[in-house]
Length: 159
Image (cartoon, rainbow, N blue to C red; front, side, top):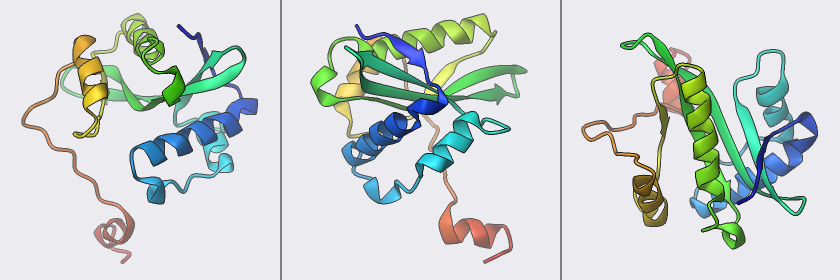
């Protein structure tokens, strides 16, 4: 199992490259517009928006996990939202991704969080199977919603 470690500013290029590979895997590379400067600001700017970890095998970055804190208003407690987990195909099925989830679960418990949550594409059967094996369950009855691009500007009264 590869060790995960918190990223540092010098890791931004590796994080960026692994996130690009994730976008390609998810068939949404057209949505991948983040720059290394954007990531650096989000992870290490004056007001960081997210945190990241890298998994390394023999000094090579083979996985990335990006997450941020949420808040559950009904429980009055924080949570952790995993935005992305990606492990290079040649390093899958070694427990690397599961180790990231384990680390974040421990962090959630230590910080008094109510849950660790994430999305998964409905066609990604291998990931869904792995998540079920970890004890995760789908939130039936909930459907993600998103407003972006021109619709976001219109909603804001600027379109």
